[in-house]
Image (cartoon, rainbow, N blue to C red; front, side, top):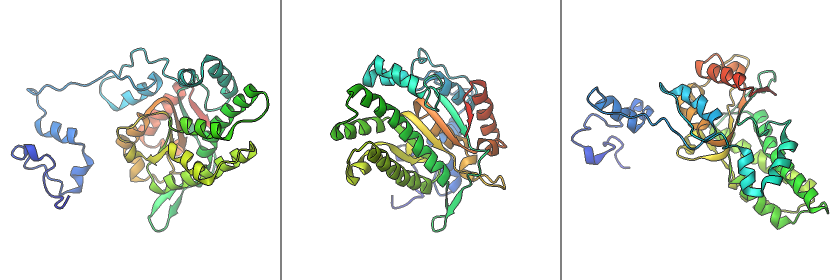
Length: 307
C-alpha cells in the first residue's frame, strides 16, 4: 500500500470520507466497529449473532461476558477432547486415554482450565533488541504440557503393540496429525520464538527416550504442524486445543498494554474448540476486571489450578 492515508473501502469513498487511517487510533477499531459508530442509530437494524457452533459451552459461556447478550451453544456439550479422540482413534482408545490423563490438566471433563503460576517466581524477561517480553518458565511449562499429552498417547500405543516399540514413520505422522489440532498463542513475538525453540528441544528428548530416531528436519516439521503464533495472527483461525501464555509476571505487578487489551485476549480464548488452557500469573493479573472475571469463572467451574 503506497499511501497509508487512503481510505480503506474505496467502493464507498463518497460515504466514508472521514474514515482514513492516518491516525493510530483508527487502527484500534475493527472495520465493523467503525461502521457501527458512523451509521449505527435507531433506524439501522443491527443483529447480534448469539449462537455459536465452534466451542464447548464452558468456553463460550465465559466469552459471553464480553458482550451485552449471552452466547448460546446448541448441542455443543460433547465438543470435548473425548469426542476428538473418539473420531481420531476410536472409543476404546479415548476411554483409556481419559483414565491416563484424569489427574492432569488434560482431563477430559474440564474443557477450560487456568493454570495460575502466582505462587511461583516465574518472572518475565525482556529481549533487549526488540523490547519484547518473554517468560522462559512459562515456555518450558507449556512445552512440557504438550509433551505430556504426546507421552500419554504414545504409552498407550506402545502397550497396545505389546512389543514396546513404535515405527518411526508412524510416530512422525501421528505427531504431525496431533500437532495440527493444537494452537499455542501469546501476545509477545519473542515468547513465540522461545516456545518454538524449547518445544523442539523437549520433543527431541522425548523421542530419544522412546528410542525413536527422527531427524532434526522432521522435528522442526512437527513443531510447525502446531500453530505457535501471536494472538493477532490467530484472527479467523480455530484449533481443537488452545494454550495461552500470558507472560506478564513481576514483583511490581506491572501489566503491559498488550495484556490490558481484553479484546485481544477474547480473540485468543475464542480460538479453542474443545480444550482451552490459560497459563500465567492470574493472581497478579486479577487487578484488572477482565482477569478477575476469568478467575471467578474458572473457580465456578472448578477449572482454576495452581502450578
